Each structure stands twice: as structure tokens, then as C-alpha cells.
Length: 432
Image (cartoon, rainbow, N blue to C red):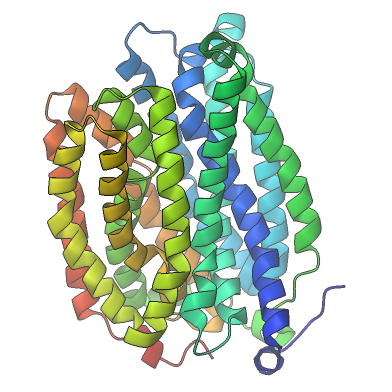
């Protein structure tokens, strides 16, 4: 049974109740991101089915373009679901978002190929991705807000880090499914029909999550949701513009480097370092397990040293280390050393990802919190995170691949400057 509580009552929740709420919200987050990431990981097998071209880089470029298009719907999703969450409750918004993701995955699973229906195939693929992008655009802000509000004060960094544990877990689960399929089927079978299996699994898992989310505890009360400012973009941009711009600033670099060393890295190892696709998948699986485990560690660290300090260290280290790590990976011939280098990069990224949702939630008041978190994140993520693969492949095709490394480094330097200048969100008192 779901229960309605006031913000004061939330403070009285037992640790066990808080953990249950975190797990409930996280289950949907995991499914959402599994469904979204499986597209990227399976692209090596289905890109030719929708974009018949003899050049593998061109096929991946087209597929990455649709991946980026899915991100362009995120600001719309961030606005729409942020408004729903602030006006009608976090729980309702999370139920709708996971249901939409289910529909998008099922659509991709049954799509005819280019050989069957011609240009309509990539168009329908694009529509499915836009639908999923809308869903994920709403999922991040709503779940980040919910988990921040239900987390125990003093341990919010630790509890809120589980948003990225499940986000990475969804990515990891997508990779694990792909590794299993690679063992069960030949490359020809995977390209012919095997790539559809993960999308079917994702749609089924979404239904399970829908059931689990029905029991979530709501973290807002009726009086807060009925305020005229609730879910208002005008109020957000007028009264909280500085916070909005600050989140845009550090999310741009944070999301760009995150997608560079996660979703794009598998393609980079295959397409640039010349690694076998199965070996690259195995390397990334091991890397993501370690990365996932790092999130609670760095979340707890932020409770001790402060969120602003974590962000400053992230920006500085990421700006310095990106170019050397990417350059070394380009000529790597040892899968183990490749894994070590990627883990080093993602350890730095963990300073941001472990508290990414929480630090945003701490910057906005309750009536526009879900909207502020979701929309600011979605805009920056759509422009910089979603385009990471496309920009990287474009530089590679143009013969200037190393320029992409400097681009990522520059955006992280901007995140460093923003972190230095922003007020300490933990001292704002906005997140009670």
C-alpha cells in the first residue's frame, strides 16, 4: 500500500523504510536506463539493418545520430515530467515514465528493417527513440528529486548515489545481456534477429518495475502541489535562474565525459583501438562493475568533504586527465591495461556522478525541484551528453580524432570553474 506523508513525516521514516523507498525508485531507474543503453550496445549489430552502407563508421555515425536525437527529447521530457512531479506528485511521474519506456522498447523490438520497408524503417526507429528520450528525460529529474527527498539527512550523498548505481546497473545489465547473446549466437544471427531480444527483455522488465513503483511513498503534500508556482517554468527561470545556469554549466562537462567513457568507449575500443567486439564488451563489463561499486563510496565521501569540494576535484582532475587517457587508449593492445585506464577515468567521473542528482536537488525549492533538476539536466545532457558519440565519430571521420579529447577536457574545465564559483548547495537549506 502506498502512503501519503508530509515532509515532516518523511523525517520520521525509519532507515528501513527509507531503504525500501530508495530500492523502489531505483528499480524503475535501472529498467529505464537498461532500455535506453541497450540501443547503443546493440548498434554494432543492427546498424546495417537500418542503414545499409558498406562503411562501418558511416553506419555507426547514422545510428549515433538517432541516439543523439533521443537526447533532444530529454528537455521536453524534463519539462513535462518535472511539471507532473511538482504538481501531481513524484510517484505519478515515475509510473508514467517507466510505462512510456516499455512502449518504446517494444516498438524497437518488432521494427521491420530497411530491406523490408525501405526508408520507413529508420524513420520508425527514430520515432521509437524520441519516445524513449521523452521518458528518460523525465525519469532522471523525478527519480533524483525523489531519492534526494527520501534520503536520510547527513547521509544523503550515500543514499542518493544509488541513482547512479542503478543507472550504471542498467548499462551494465545491457552489456551483460549482450555478452550472453554473443556467447549463444553467431555474429550473423545477432545481426539478423538476435539484437531484438534485449529490447523484448527491457519491455518485460519495465512492467515489473511498474508494479514495484506502485508502492512508493509520496514525498510531497497536497498544499505544496497546489501552489501556483509548482512546476512553473516562468517561476524557475525568473526566481532560480542562477541555480539553473549553474546546473547547466557542470552538467555539460559531467554528462559529456560520462558518455565518453561508458557508451562510446565500447565503440572506441573496437573502431579506433582495433579491439575485437567481444573483448571490448568483456572489458567494459568489468569496468562498469567497478564503476557501479564506486558510487556509494564517493557519495559517502561527499557527506564528509562536501558536495562543492567533490565537484571542484571532479572538474580539475577530469580536465587534466582526459587527453592523456584517451591518447593512451588509442594505441593500447592489452585489454587489461585498457580496463585500468578506463577505471581511472571513471573514478574521477564518480566524484560527479555519485552526487549529480542530489547536488541539483539541493539547489531548488520543493515547488520547482523536479522541474529544476530535470529540465536543467536534460538541456545540458541533450546538447553535450547525447552528442558525445556523434561528435567523436565525426572527428574520427574527419581525421581529427584527437580534437575530441581536447573538447571533452575543455568542457570539464568549464565544470571546474562553475564549481569554484557556485554557492555551497548543502548550506542553502532548500532540501529539508
